[in-house]
Image 1: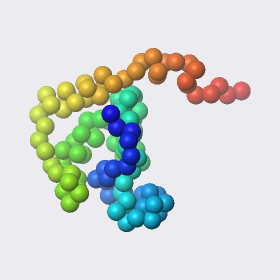
Image 2: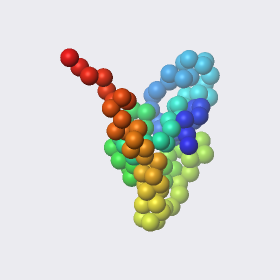
Image 3: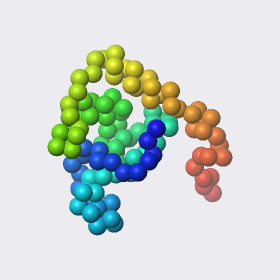
Length: 108
């Protein structure tokens, strides 16, 4: 469920870190694929936080942001969108999110 390698997300940002590090032009606009675990609890979304909801992320990809890189537009019904968002919520691990041992460090 994600978290494996790098992918072109269709964003037209200026992040060139991977391309500079690898020295390959084809790595422009490629970003580390995050895990989908707890995705519903990790807003904002995209590498630079441009979307504050999962609905906005889905709408962005539905527009076909980069057909030249295989990201073509597609149609989703409101029911389809709700099902995708429900699926994302099903990947939430409440035990992980509420474990005090995994929270932010205490400040003194």
